[in-house]
Image 1 (cartoon, rainbow, N blue to C red):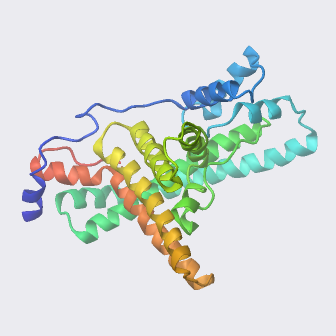
Image 2 (spheres, rainbow, N blue to C red):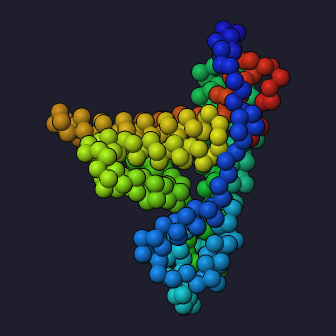
Length: 313
């Protein structure tokens, strides 16, 4: 009861439908913005209408990616698909479709039905460290298998059509630090924000000479990059906090690297230190998934109003 009473000090309702709703910028917008910037940079010389429309509305990726780049796509579009190459793509495509089915409709479904759904409700009604922790791991694993499964479907179907799209996931839970994680998790989105937000903002600061301190510049870049990613997911406090949290992880990791260099700390690189790094990164990332899930929001709101809807994944 004391937990609920302390939570009731939160004054405003913060559910997805109670602030400003979802800010859903489509994946088509990401492709279009990237093209506009690369045209401005002179990297794209011409945009034939037929190729532009085919790239923009390539149906396997139209709803949830992966986010392709126009130059890469057109290069593949124009390249003749020889029989040997297509047979290889066909084999990979069939495998990825079955793998996607396993991820999304078997593993993801089992996690949702027999773990996440029940523990999220328990954590909302009876918040405790055990319940909330369990819901955190359940949601993080469900999120991965559900979205990775969908991405595998999209890539697999594109393989059957003769295209080999960029991948979205590369064993993200084996990342040794937060930078490594974002090189592995939702890679096409991560690389899009890196190339078209972070790098350009850093370049602008340097060209305009707004600051000579590279640490300050990179930290501002991390904040802008990750907060924008949070806002893109939706205008709710937990999406924005999710972005801010990841920015702080990036800033903190860079500070840790500078501290090691300044103190001349020699940390051995072996299987034990690697395992510790993976463990720490894994749990820090899963805390962000808990924030992203909205479960803490449901806990707060249920304490304020017992009739507030329970989470339903």
